[in-house]
Length: 266
Image (cartoon, rainbow, N blue to C red; front, side, top):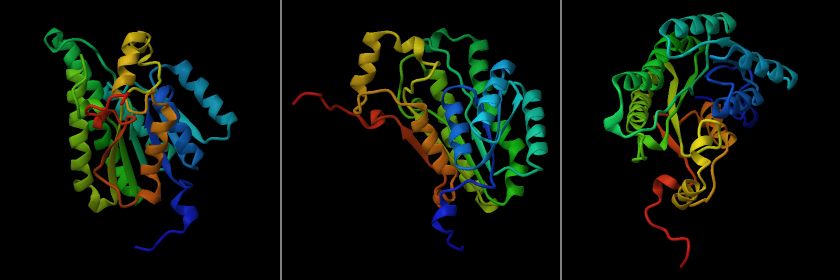
C-alpha cells in the first residue's frame, strides 16, 4: 500500500462517523474529537431536547454534526437510525463508535430476569445489531473503523458488576472476531476499556469520599480519568495513522488493570 503523507495520516477530513450516545460524557467527547479532526459526524440520544442543544452548540463551534433521536435498546430505533445515517452520508460510513452502555450495580444473586435482559439488550445485543446494520455502509466506504466502548470490568472483577462485566467481556471477544472477519473488507475493529472516568454516570458512586479514596488506592496515577482522555484514543484508532492496528482492546485506566500490589510508601 502507498504511504500517506504526515498530514493525511493525522486527519479525518472527508470521513464520516456515527457515534451512539453522543450528548454526554465519553460519547460527547468522542463526537468533538472526531469532528475536530475533520470528520462529519452523526450521533444519537434518547433525549430530544438534549440532542438539539448539543447540535446547536457544535454548529457554533464549526463542527459538522447531525443527529437522530434514538433509543439504541430498541431494534426498530436502531434500524431507523441506520436509515438516517445512510441518507446523511450517501450510503458510506467510515467510522462506527459503539459507545452506549449502562450498568445496574447489585450482587449477582439479586439480579432479576428483567434487569439481566435490560443489560444484555442495551450493552451487547444492540451493539451486535448495530454492527450488522452498519456493515454494508462500512464496506462501501472502502476503509472502515469500528471502535467499541468496553470497560476494565471485562478483564478484572469489580464489585457488584457481574452482569455488566459479562457484557463487556462479550464486546471484547466480538472486537477480536470482527477484526478477523472484516479485514478482507478493509474494516478494522478495536475497543477502548476505561476505568473510572469523570462523567455523570459515576457521580453518585464517587460522591462517597471513602470509596473514592479506595479507587485512588487501586489506580497508580491516583486520579479519575477525563472523557477527553478516552476520546483521544478513540480518535487515534480511527485515524489513518493507526491503519495496522486491529483486534485490540486498550485500557484507559491510569494503570488500574495492571496494579498488583504497589504501596504508596516505601
